[in-house]
Image 1 (cartoon, rainbow, N blue to C red):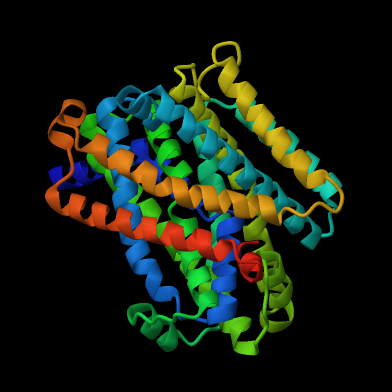
Image 2 (image 1 turned 90 degrees about the horizontal axis):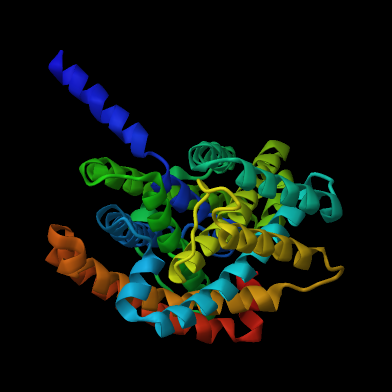
Length: 419
């Protein structure tokens, strides 16, 4: 009986802390991420599935560090960077990240417009409607209700799992190529592989996760459950990535159908896997883009306000956090307005965001490593030696990947990879 009570008690605690880890990791599969995974599957079949294993391990370690700092210090990552590295470095970092996040926000609304057109709606209808919806939800909900809404949006991603099974892949081949690393020095292959790595681990995730952990008020004694939730979120997000690649590999790659976007993938799935698979893929893309269009502006508002010591948080009223909500509204409206410009080509803006995010990530990771190993800040919660070894090695690898990302992205013939 006691064991039963203990199990129920542990599960209840897990439900209490549930939210930040799963939400942050899920939103990582946004419009740009789904596009990248779709291209990976359509152009290279199952050959990149193996990369999701080391990427997941690194993502778990990075996200766990961020969550742990939030629990132990009770402060967001921007707060800690300003206090420990100075205002000058903070301002430069914030400026670069705001521009990158603004460009990504534009791409989310571009995804909403494209997904809407798949269902027969003009962007001049779908985008303004979603802007109104996004602003209404964030301005009216407190953190607790907003978190419940975000968890509901996570279920949109189930559509990709269903699409994967509808595609009827050769599961023996899928398992074999997932467990057997393969590699090519072909420039196009490298560009897509770099894109897969870059879209899975991004700077904004660390800021948002830590801020949401702080706003949720997770305590040290609850951290074991919070860590489990963070790990679960990382696994879920890469399982979704796995099924997106499998879906496109089993249908598009097998039939030599080339694509340049997730919308192309959804359109092509109809005649190859049936209209239901097409609709599920399109619905997942719309849900992911809408999710990203909410989270990216919130994340940006969080870390900018923390960096400059302004009040922030969706638990506060507009009058209590004017800068936070004003920045959120401006980012949302601007991101949507750019998409509404007739005949606009967003590729250069999206490429610029990839370059900046790629360059900023190693800097953010180094700052995190310095902070998480600071005994004055973290006490007994500093990193174990093995985690430091993995993270420093991973940071160096990501730095090299970022340099390669810049080099390949600047080549005009590879621009379509990152659309």
